Image (cartoon, rainbow, N blue to C red; front, side, top):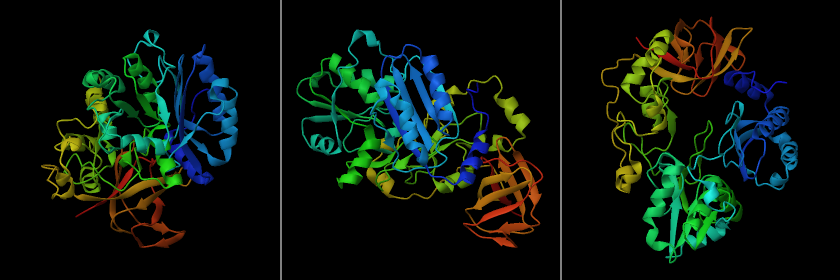
Length: 452
């Protein structure tokens, strides 16, 4: 029986678009004793694959942690697949603030040692003896208490773009790093302060609250359902949001806006910005904050080195990264020495308010082209590609470059353009333009106009 994906992410995205059905992005977790995680994983894959459910799910002896995308029409059927298990009956599904049909493009269910890497020996304490759950209104109230200490148990690249006011935001890259840091920092406040914690969806705080109670903290609280559920409740109940900025999420969206505040800056030029980018270079994929101007100039790259590499033939790119350990760049998110502004959380607000003139980060790289947009579809039989034009105009007769990590760099001269089903000589910003191409186009590809 098929227990794996047969479609690529690009093919799945096309199918989703062609179906034209609304999809929901949601997350949930549950701590429970699972005797056979492998069988549990296989049963879930079979049930969810039938419902066109996609996502990234971890299962272990201690429970399940899931971030998913499902067709809205299949929501109740999906709930039914959960109700089969006693520990998931009535489970809370955290629905995203901003849904995106492409938030997940594969169904990946992995068996792990733990559903969250916490570095704890669970046998030394009672993981069910957790802190008090607080709903949004209660959470807002306790934050106003002068005897409250609020701690963000997310990583630095998450809290950098958004956090609760006056929260302690550890400069860590993993959840396990934050536990001993906070424990040591708050040693003198085990009895006289309220230890209030939060994370994205609640799963990290569920374990952390039990850990800190074991460490002797008397008044331990956690935000029920995390930031995702908090954002939903403040909207439904008309409450003040004490969370400012954007909530980082672990899917293709990389974030959903909670308030209009921008509390971070572009890591390359210093302008106010809270949009994350994964470096285009497959040998890097560094996660960092990048504004639209730098994104266009640097073509989604974190450095001039990576910019040069993505313009090399694919065979040369593979040769450069073969046998090399790139994990440092992959996991040290936003900390590369190539980035000039990488400590947004340490900067005064005045530094963010002033929109500084972008520095010349391209240096010696001379690329005579301008980014026009990105690929939307590729029709295999007709050998026709569709692109959305997001910048400037595209004219028949223009020389263009289509570039992507798998496609490489392909140049051609446009002879015939189709917009809204009709042939035209010009495609404007916002248009979806189609034209014939003699090679396969992928959703990661971008289109550029080559300048004289």
